[in-house]
Image 1 (cartoon, rainbow, N blue to C red):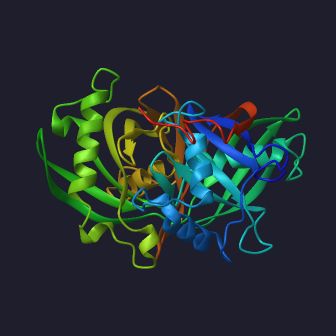
Image 2 (cartoon, rainbow, N blue to C red):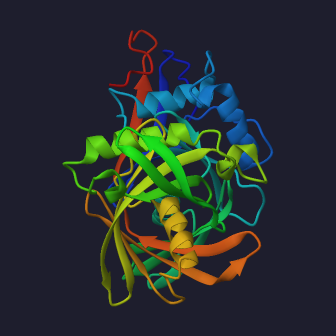
Amino acid sequence: MPAVSAADGVREVRTTDYHTAGEPFRIVTGGLPPVPGDTVAERCATAIGAGGSGTAPRPGPLDDVRRLLVREPRGHAGMYGGFVVPPDDDGAHLGVLFWHKDGFSTACGHGTMALGAWAVDSGLVAAPEEGSVPVRIDVPSGRVTATVHRTAGRTTGVTFRNVPARVTARKVPVATGRGVAEVDVAHAGACYAALPARQLGLEVTLADLPELVRAGREIRTALATHPATWHPESPLLSGVYGVILYDEMPDTPFGPHQRNVTVFADGQIDRSPCGSGTSARLALLAEDGLLAPGDDLLHESVAGTVFTGRTVGTPGERGIVTEVTGTAYRTGEHTFVLDPHDGLGTGFLL
């Protein structure tokens, strides 16, 4: 379907929406303008350069679609999604550009899980009635795999294998409005800063959520120029993407148990336990000796939804491989329109 209908000038964009452990993911399946670039990483850089960072004064057509889908009245400030694009080569089934209310991101675990479920549910990737099938996806941070689990012809779960995760700094002092905090930094497709919420006199609860968001924004801003946040391979992967504030919970028989809230972009809250953020926590726990080979991390979100995560093999030069398992469910299919006479245009954010 063309991005704009020749008959009346109305732009139409088709999506299939999923949620992964409560976090939305809007998959754009039609109405996307061409995205220049030979690889997914190049297309992401092009999208950011055209206004996806939120700093360019004149966004391009691709960013117009992002704004249309993430802003009210068609979306909301907590919306997340992805543009399906060609993969880098025949080794992957599809590529994706991840986006949120403030622009584009290099990694998204919950989105990868939703895309895996969608690829199987839509028939893009053939799958057995019983068993599992891998869906290989090129994302801006590299190639990842979503293994889709099936029972009686139904998708029952997805396991996301991330790019290697590595720890880059420990106990970095950061001044906040609630005192100085010590944060750990790890890269897992995107850069995360992590700290116990109790350091700031907080708990990962809905009651403390406004203060947790405020602290997350302060920490992200304070670490903007810290060398531990820069990635040696690409500026695209550099800079703090999210801040993970967590509570330690009693261990399960299978390993550690934590509850977290991940604050990303400009104060956006992950409703899920955060897929790539869970990878970052796994790398930190493994380095601390708190996650043994074969152990599972039970990772809760502030909304009470759950991922389980584990490490795979031994750490290599680029870090340690992690897997995160959760569930993804389709919530709707939509044809969004933008009437050229609509004075609100691509919408607004409150």
